[in-house]
Amino acid sequence: MQRAPNPADSLPPSLLHGTEATGKSLTINALLQTLEHPSAIIRSRECITTRHLLERTLTEVQNALGNTAPSIDGRCENISTYLVQLQRLLQGRKRFILVFDNIDRQREAAPTLLSALARLGELIPNLTTVFIITFPRPNLFQHLGIPHIHFPSYTRAELLTLISSSPLPLTPPPGTSSPTNLPTFTSADLDYLWPRFAAAVYDSLAQSASNSLPSLRTLCTRLWTPFISPILLNHYSPREFSKLMVRNRHLFQSEDALKHSIVPSLQPKPNSLTISTSAQPQPSQTTKRQVASTTMIIKLPSLPSHLLLTAYLASHTLPKHDTLLFSKYSTSRRKRCGGGAMANRTPNKNKKTQVANTNL
View 1 (tube, rainbow, N blue to C red):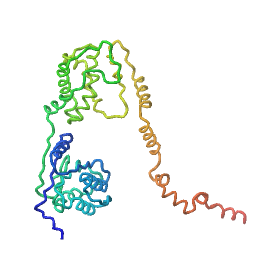
View 2: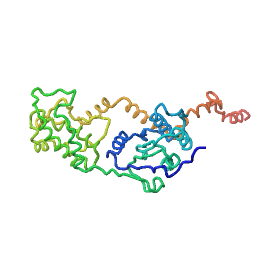
View 3: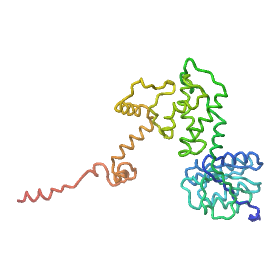
View 4: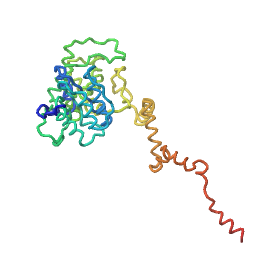
């Protein structure tokens, strides 16, 4: 007979929580590579439904075990079937580590899903479960004594240190025409300019709008090319940071870099690398609107254009007519009831009136 699982042999699930982009997934990946136990990481945000999550978990566990894994039925509709299949995979083996990344972002998750996954270790003693979530609730697992590790947000000094470790080059972006008399810069110039530029971006935009490492990196990438355009035109040197800030103060006062849009901005292209002067004529408001509307029509990708056009046309249809116009069930029902000419046939309401007039 098979020995019943001993709760003393099982380990409670571990919880890693913290805001986004604080190194939770990177830390657990590095830790699993140093351990000898087999492991699998399930990214819950890539799973559409709970069934997709359970079936993908069984597939990842089977792949982690390799050729020694027994064959199982890949279909898994509920937690009970998932438990039976997982017990069959891990029967007679050493400890296995199962990590659920962003489990709190799982789509169509039942309220008891996390509690059920957290208590799998009580029935499978050689299973260790690790959950990576963003903001835990006090009564998340309904289980006492869950070990947890908090990953706090990066401070200003830590963010700037991480950003400064990988600066962008002090050259024109690839695919653009560079000026003929492009000056040469040393690594010392870049080391002087990049940390100060990153600090200015953080203090002006990222501190209040996007306080995370990927968002700060994205902002720096968007603003770096227009910021260094006076340097590439040999108007200023990399050491004149104060003059560059005064010259490019509109970049840090505007919030255009924070907007995520599929429509490109109407600013000059980076390959021109030109600086507007007071002698150049300024376009009027009417010209700006015409250019904006023309640019939106030309630059908008094909798929968003068709989606917007479809949504606009569908918005003119009343909701009560959606089933009649777009449902296949209503079409087949009309055919079964005698659709076509029979559906368009209407009774002659004036028949009795005609008969009465004839009698008169």
